[in-house]
Image (cartoon, rainbow, N blue to C red; front, side, top):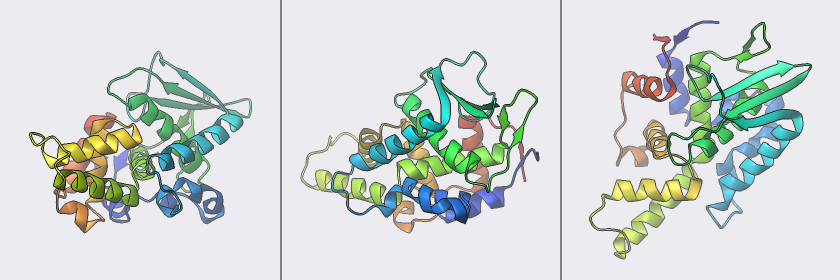
Length: 241
């Protein structure tokens, strides 16, 4: 497995919005497209969408796999605190429950769903299996899967709705005047999605690559800066080329 991170591949994915559908083969897309929350237009409660779809796919994953939530004694050195193992023809998934920020355990659970359905069953990402049955992903693919996870949790339509609501609250004086607008906006996304603050900021920086409206209030970073942020949050050490 190649231990490098191709900046052009990451950038291309970001410019496509980080849409999970690009990580799934056409054969799997019909069923898994339901993970793409932004395609659902018949929801009126914006807080219902990610949670409802997550629960559906989380239940499917748990029916197909043994899923254990625990403090993993030796979590992976890089990537999410998740372990995927193939044993006796059954997938075992370990989700680390130690907390480092508000919402981080829920975030890991959501990423486990995306890694399983897109990274393992999606047929596009290639993995390796070690002598103990552990599924190994390249660090580049883990970055792509983390981008896709944030896309599913915070699709463009949801982000734009929360932005408009926050703007409306600001105009009618309902927001804390001592707090910057961006901070209030991020806190509203956190409230609606139950994900860590750092994941929201990262999602907005990623979304700025494909959404000019977002780039107006959060600057587009260079790919070197994005890779450094992924390294910091994911512990990645592969060379960026």
